[in-house]
Length: 531
Ligand code: PEP
Ligand code: MG
Image (tube, rainbow, N blue to C red; front, side, top):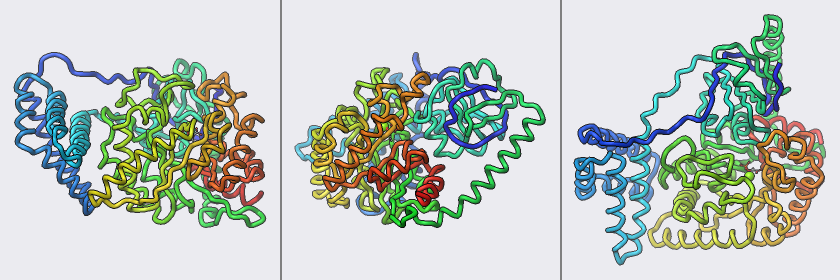
């Protein structure tokens, strides 16, 4: 038996698929074949039109007009001629589109009209969508059923790409409870065991393995008796899940009848359906950085709008708290420029990255604000250290709002902006942050690693990097008390919110809002009802 950290509960028996090393994205170099590049471009234009058609069926008014305008940009004779010229002179279709969009943008930027100048955002959107469509030539991996994915390091994009129909569990040599693959596995409801030393050397593709996510163990080549034992455990687990289903229809209240707000953490708008079915009071944390994974170009404004709008429409009048891009050392989308590395503790990550890459940030804020016309969207800012960062974001939001008003674009003028409290600085200045933010969300994963100075991804730091540590508990209690005193709603959205043994303490500190992964919602509701 191999031991690791059980990061997502449940049991699975399957055939191993072992992946070693990161997949490499190749970049085409050398001479191109103009005919081939031209057909690639024409095929992408068709896909583009199809995508715009599909998206515009879900939109109306100004949103629809913006989309249609994007087709005009792409089919503009000047643009088309320039792309053709670039391809014929030996450039790849991708290079031709980048160059033509750049020229088009330069022309618009010369306009005296602010409105026209702002349309360059649409050109960026067109460019990114076209590049994305042309890069989608990957052949999907064909897996049979009941695959146990085993990797040295599970990247967020590997986990995101998993098809639950085929993959029944995951295991890796690195990672811990609060690492992002673990968060994603819990969200998908598949068992995960991480930090299993040497697993990729011991197990080979095709081997039968048992994954025990509840106890954190892996059984390679199990005998008949062990397989039967685990089949019984799988059945028992399924029965327990069924029994828990009754809690989906119950409100979240303590034994003494106090109402507690229970939200869900999601990474994808489809998951909002599950959150609703589980009776959640809303979405407490929509981690948007995962939308940037597994693609070569960042999603544009319209693509993001469609995603946020979908979550907002599903949740209706319940809040959907959407966190702006939060890239960090453990989640670097390949499509973003990060100088190849990010120090987990002290680099340009979270809100720092967004404020440094303003154009990218504005695309997200504009999409969020446009989506706010369709539901109860709230904006959450990651890794806030100082109130100035919130002020800076508010200024950008105000400017976008002014532009929207001039252009008659609907949005919620009173959209609220919250701050994640997940650094010692945010904790020590919780009063200053609370004065500036509309609400606070405590990110216990990062708060724990930064307070304890213990990397959350590092196996050796397991004992120190725990939210149960007194220093972290004091920090959480302090933030709750300070936000309460300032009259600002405060919630806990890190993985500790789903740690059933810590819940009584959190309630005692005065916490009334929790946001947990979908697979923990019912357990948390049941536990709260017993406190
Ligand atoms: C946290 O740090 O607790 C949090 C919720 O953010 P993430 O896990 O995405 O870093
Ligand atoms: Mg965090």
